[in-house]
Image 1 (tube, one colour):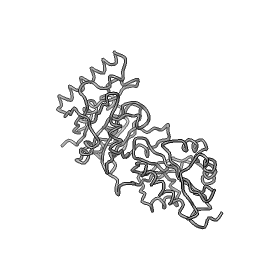
Image 2 (cartoon, one colour):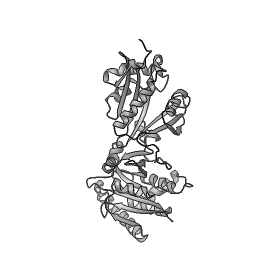
Image 3 (cartoon, rainbow, N blue to C red):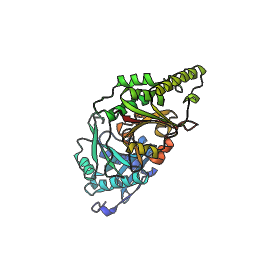
Image 4 (cartoon, helix red, strand yellow):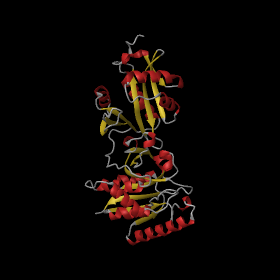
Length: 371
């Protein structure tokens, strides 16, 4: 095989027949943390994965594997490898560029990746190509080595500043986690904690949500934001009690009605603004550009495949994308903070996901710092 010229290498999307050559290349390039044959097979079939291969004649000499997260404009360069006999010929750089192009064409806004902190060659490549380090992950690899997190914005020169991210510690405290992120956004001295997370949830929960332990609505969350020295304004698409159609037991429904009616009385007594109309991405962009932040109700189905109400924290807008922190990290699918923080959501996708249930409920709390 003549590997002397870069022009001899061709690039194309991977197909099912590439499975065995991909596994062989993976085993040749990596001693640990290898992608298994089973995982490669799943990636080649998945609608949220895209693999590009480099071919020298009939020989597969490199690949780049990109993963997409549903409902966001985020792409993750999951792995990239080049046959050792073909290194030094810019194949890795070409794979990286083509991965970015594929992500761009798929409507993605940000490319992120992890790399071993001792992989100096790869780090030089990423930095030279415009990637910036934004975090670290200790004990990330099988041998407990640290991973460095890098990202590149594909459609903007400079990403918006990122506020503090907090991962919810339970299945039911997304609202509380979002409240803490809002507090930290306006008060840099504030440090979120699991104690505050549980306290906020207990104070704001409506007791029953579907079959879970209980979720929070916009009125209870707004009261907690006010207690923390912030100025909330509620935007909800309809009056009255919310989420009752998810609860069949009449005793539970009665309790939820009592709790929600009490929350609304407290909100009215404290003069918290309420606007009964839906919130669009364009509306939210106007508020964010004016210095506000927001906690927004979305359907969990578009984010992680579960038909549950879910709260996220929105903090910036750029190039027709809403930037959010999603406090839920789907660890069962191998997600890390990289997959949940600083997510750019295209306006069109945001308008689809920020509706819940049969009645397309829209709910959000706009937040400003109390002066």
